Length: 397
Ligand SMILES: *Cc1c(COP(=O)(O)O)cnc(C)c1O
Image (cartoon, rainbow, N blue to C red; front, side, top):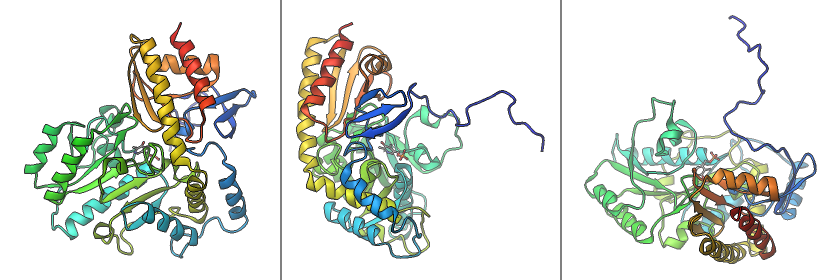
């Protein structure tokens, strides 16, 4: 083979990400530091991962012990921390069984595989489809980017995976069409669309969808990768909608930053994963599931859900006041708990850059005109006040 290695010097890391021009070297609580020693208030939480803040002591302590005990052994053996974390998740949800993996996309991939196998084995449907929704985000693997009903995510990756149908989100008329769709085997959706612009599902729409699913035997699968593990003030966002999904996926915050994902399912669905049907070498390993157990225990001990709800209400009130002050700049404030979107009339990235450069505050965008604010759930009123005063300053000039 010819040596086609580029003569031009390129970064050894592929350019799949646009990156902010800082290098983060340390994190503690709500703050991170760059390599020049500048301290930033981190209201990105590593994209909704560091719910307990950076390097939370309670999790760190347990992980340090685990480092001296066992890192990995594979799923060919029983793993105590995996079984413990599964039991905790089952007790905290309406699901019966858990499959562990390493990321949100892999969790959704698992959910898609479960739905297909369930349709084949239990419902005797061999070529049904899964319905997903406009502006959704379900991941970057081939099946999950196909599930993601956004052209920009799919651009360049055809042929896509067959077996998906898209409907508009929050449209009652659109889901009525499922009444006549005998090939729909499952729906997969977020309770609050995160990447797609911080768009909460309407309560009534979810009830309508839930009813249609029950009536038609369609699996209700909720992607809680971003909303789950407390981000919206309850452990799972679906709890606030009073529904009881068949399948739930989680990842981001479950390990406090140690990579882990999970597919939770009711037994009538999970039973189709018999030995040899699905797998993941690293999935649920002793280290990541120990992080998961410590994360959930810390949530309980430190009353994190109540703090998230309280902080979320406070932040939303402050943002609404800013909206009143700058009605031309702020068009909408929305979200749930500490998954907060602010729709602006200007380019969101410009505001994000100003907050970082002038005031050492980190937030994200969700699309061109939406600021996405993801504080650690353990933030406090002083930090929120600081953030609001600096956002005010940025909006003011
Ligand atoms: C982040 C995200 C994913 C993908 O998770 P990865 O860990 O990046 O694979 C899937 N669904 C939702 C709702 C997400 O926010």
